[in-house]
Amino acid sequence: MKLGKQTGSLVNHIYSRTSNPEAIVVGMGATICLWSDRHAVTIVEIGKGYLVTQADTVTRVDTNGMSESQSYEYTPNPNGSLEYWKLDKNGKYRQAHKNPNGRLVFNNHSSHLGIGYREEYYDFSF
Image (spheres, one colour):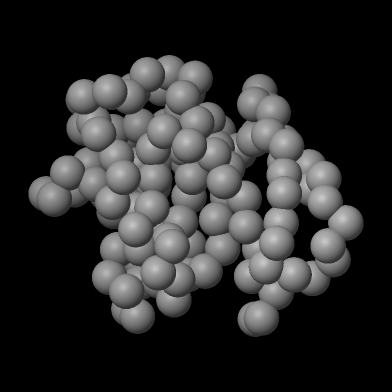
């Protein structure tokens, strides 16, 4: 994830570089890093060179309103949306989709995945 080109957040830039493909297990938490927002997910499938994540149920538990200080509770959601992630040449997982032939290909402007932690964050400045 390139700072200033693929993300506007230094935190997301750092988080997108925190995956260790050898230590990944089904049920592990992960975080989708967008431009400045983050979304909590659970790893539900591991394949050769790819992962599938499912969106968690996320509940905000603080009363801080539109602020930088945000606290959330996370629960795996068996009905959450699924996302594909493909391992790139740098050893990082980037968002992908299946083409008509069933092959996984990177999305244009694909998000990155931080593995091993769940974090939700909404940037109210946009």
